[in-house]
Structure formats: C-alpha cells, structure tokens
Image: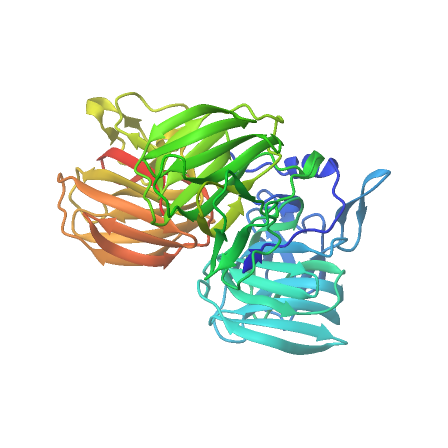
Length: 573
C-alpha cells in the first residue's frame, strides 16, 4: 500500500522558488520541509487594527500587536483574506479568490472561553456570509466539519480532538485536495479525506459564541515530488518499475525473485528539472539478504548516468558497507566501512543524499561521504540486488534527514549564536550556566531535528529549591516556541510546552535525584509523540508534542546554576 501526500497537479515555474523564499523561515526554524510554495505566511507581530489583506464579514476583529483576535463573543464572527498571489505569463499578479485546487490552510488558535457552543475555526470555500465551509473546534474537544449554505448551518461530520481547551494554544491544519478535506490538530489527524465537492472562494477564520486569538496563518500548496510511503501490504508495489521484471510483492514484502548479476526496482520518484527538481532527499527502507557470500549484495542505487554507469550503496553480509561506482565491468569502491550487516535478518537503512551521502543502519551512523554525482544532481533512485534474492519492505521517500550523530563533551567554548539567553561557559569540560536567570537557554552545536531521534545528556543541579530547574530543550524555534523537560532538586519533573510565549504543562512526575548529583535524561521523539527517560527509567511516555515540528536541540535552566555533559543525538527507529 502506498501512502502519498498530496501532489500538486499545477504548472509551477521558477517564480515559486522566489515566492517561497520571500517568506523566510525564522533563524532557528528547522528547514526540513516538504516541497511547498508558501503563498501566505503571517504572524501579526507589531500589527494593530485590521491587518492587510484581511476583511471582516461578521463580528468584530482586530490585531493587538501580537495576534489577530475575534474580540466580541458574537453569535458568528468571520474574517477572510481577500487577495491572493497568482501567476500568469505576464508575471505575478493577484486575485480575490484562492486560485489553487490543492492547498493547506494552517493557523494557531486559542479559544478564550469554555463550553460546547464556544467554537473557533478555519474557514474555506467562502463566497459570502451565507455561503462558506469551515472546520470549527469546540473548547470541549469536539471538531465539526460544517457548511453554511444559503444562511443555514449544516454539520457534515464530527470527531473528537486532543490538545485544545479554554485558553490553550493549538495548531490546526486543513488540506483541500480534489474533492476531499483532511484536518489535523497538532499534527494528529482528525478528519481524513472527508468527501466535499466544490472549491474556490476565500479562506479565513471564524468564531461562535466566544472570543479567540489566532496567529501564524499560513497557506501553502505542494509542488514537485512529494513524500510517500510504500508498505507493500496490499500486495502491490504501486508504480515501482523493475526493468528486469523480476521484482514481485510476496507476503507483504518486495522480493527480487531471480539470482542474477543485477536486479533493480525504481520507485515512483519524479526527478524533474527546474523549480520542481529533486536536489536532496532521504530514503528509509528495510532490507533482508538471505545469502551470505561476499558477492551477495543488497542496496540502493542513487546516481545513474547510464544503465551500466552508476553509484550504489551496498551491504555485504560479510560485514561491510560500501559506496561503489560501477562503470561497465569496472567497480571502484569509493568508501568501505566494516559494519556487522546481518545475514538472513531484517535491518533498517537510512540513506540521506544532501550534504554528501549519509548512511545509517538500524539508527546507527555508519558514514557520511562526499560523492560527486555523475549527472551533477540526483537523476535516479532504485533498490538493487547482486546475486541474491533480496527482500525489501517499508520504503519511505522524503526530505527529513536523520538527526546528526553527535557526542558533545564541551572541551571548547560554545560557538556563535549558541547562547540564546543567560551566561554560559565550558570550564572544566562541562557546559555550565552561571547566571541562574528566569529562563537561560543554550543550543550547543545548533543541532536541528525533526522526528525520530534521541537526545540525551548528563545533568546536575547545583541549587536545592523546588523552583530551581535544569533540563533539556527540543523543537526550539524561538524564545516563544519550544518544548522542555525540566527537573527540580526536590523531586518534581515536568514536560512543558512554550508556545506564543505561554507555558503549558503537558505532563508531570516524580524523580529521586537531589541537588549536586548528576543524572541522565533522554528525550525520544517519534512523530508527534515524545518519551522522557530518567536514569534509564521512563518518566513520561508517548506524550503528544505535535504543536511544534522540527527545531533545534538544547539545554535550559530556570533560576538555577547547572551543569550539562555528554549531550548525544542519534536517529531512532
């Protein structure tokens, strides 16, 4: 079974790259995003009154310098964007309705009141106050897909969601693709491909019987090759192509049924030119080699000039991982690293083609090697076998590279921009906070991470009161947006979210580490969840943290002098 994210069937030109670049990411924002064109990105900081390009259809709205607010708890309040950037052969222009049939509207919402009738949401297909569609979220955790048709509100579907509530910031995203609508809250699906016909119109925000705050409104649409996952669980290798005709799906895996010099299977990746071209990517796939000889190989072909001239990463059951340049009958081993690759057992491979070729096995970094591509940029990708009936499963193509394998022991000073607040040094071979401020944060190494990683370190709190906290930070984007796992010397542990400058407690627990005693903390992020482990024992498990995606990893201190050492990051499966 293949799971695709929406592929924009839109003619996209070079202007998209310029348009997307016009909405520069924040300095600390992790840039590993799906190829999208950002056609509107707005955070309302410093804006007062009615922001451009918004209009008020119902209710009372204004920006307060930080957020865009519905300020009167009216029966219905609606505001929409009345101008959208588009393109024709004469150059960029604007239109008063959304011109793309596939798009995602996302925003942060905060419902200021409680009760089932207090709703805040996202509006789409807006024509006038009597005709529009929306997803509306109650403060009690119920979401509604609704349509206002000729002045009558119709509820089309309802579902529960988590992460909202009175005066709690959450992130909602609505994706329109074809004749369906999908909605997520904090990255967790709420409605998936709900059938809805029609389209066009405008997009915006709405409230009912409540006041609410909104921020970071964004409209994007996909272009170029989108991420996808193929699990082969439905018995079909959707759009995979095997020139030799020997790959088949068997028992939910993809198998080369022949034992021959070379067998290849190309996944459906469009290496297009121009603004839609693929210039870097990450592949994750499971492999099994049933044979044990030095010439029995499974791997990934990642660069190809011709049928007989290509680069490959191959895994030898005799205990080596190699990058090879194959040119006819000549094989040049570019890189060879001893690594215990199992025979007749599944192993997980991550290959990132970006700043070099990075290979991980079962989450462990094997090497990163600079390999000049034969065609200058990626032009091919295939699963490959040599003299073995290799098996493959759970193929994932995307753009989220694994977190860098790093061990930081602080034998040198921090680098530029690594201190966000407070006073820090690395005397004595540890990272030390010496200011004991309200929220002192350092980001050693400026290590960005999206999902599926482990971040751990050794911590020590020199102070003894309950408000003296030390901890680790993840998904750091700014002083207003990050997660933290923090610990007091009196036995309290907290997992907190800071979003829009407001701190929310997601989980709390107890530990037994006093002041001036070192302890180990590990944060494991998998998708939209995080697990926190203290001295080898789980403290918080699978807490939803989808409010923020990728960001930078770091350390934090609240009103305490603390020490940190042996900060380690790695990919997890």
